[in-house]
Length: 217
Ligand SMILES: N[C@@H](CCC(=O)N[C@@H](CS)C(=O)NCC(=O)O)C(=O)O
Image 1 (cartoon, rainbow, N blue to C red):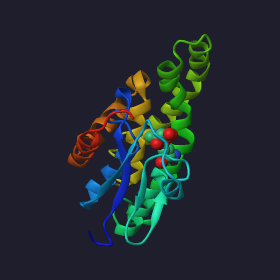
Image 2 (cartoon, rainbow, N blue to C red):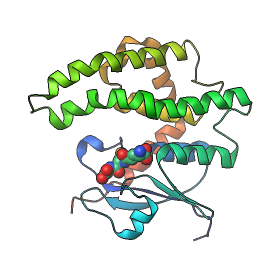
Image 3 (tube, rainbow, N blue to C red):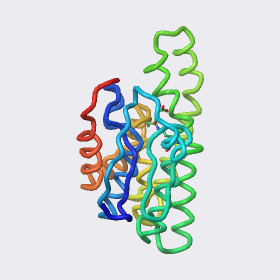
Image 4 (cartoon, rainbow, N blue to C red):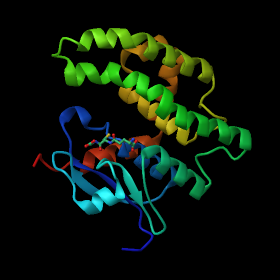
């Protein structure tokens, strides 16, 4: 194995609902877009990891990334690192790059947190009395954020001046947490479909599913 070999962490087993949804998907997608081969360091979602993994990913989550030069965690940081290192997946003009970076962070800080409870409370807490009222009270914020994304995208193909890591993350979030709310926005539906139709996304998804060969331990 070469010292420059790219390694990312991923799971060898996750519960059914998480298959094809785990966040290493965005790193795999970027690596496929860049044409970079990588290997996976597989963890089991049912077990805690040892200290060496915590030193790599302090929150004991996936994904984490390493190559011959760096170790890095947080999906957004990994995507930015890859785009900068390979001068791809970020617009080359300063204004386009700034817009892509803004949207990468906005996806993580402004969009995903608003959408997450709507998607996850019913899944994890659907049997609790507070779940449905909580979802109802959080819905206006989520719908409002989605409308802002739809307005910003308008009739453009991608959120910045060209396809970028911001699209990878935003489309991942819309796919995982957009639920039925996204149906109110034809341009977001088309945007998500445009991203998911990319061969690199399809290869990334298949690779994640192919790695799920383990069982809960
Ligand atoms: N902010 C982190 C979140 C990573 C994350 O939530 N990973 C999940 C899988 S999608 C995980 O490892 N969950 C297992 C756990 O939290 O124990 C990132 O974007 O990289």
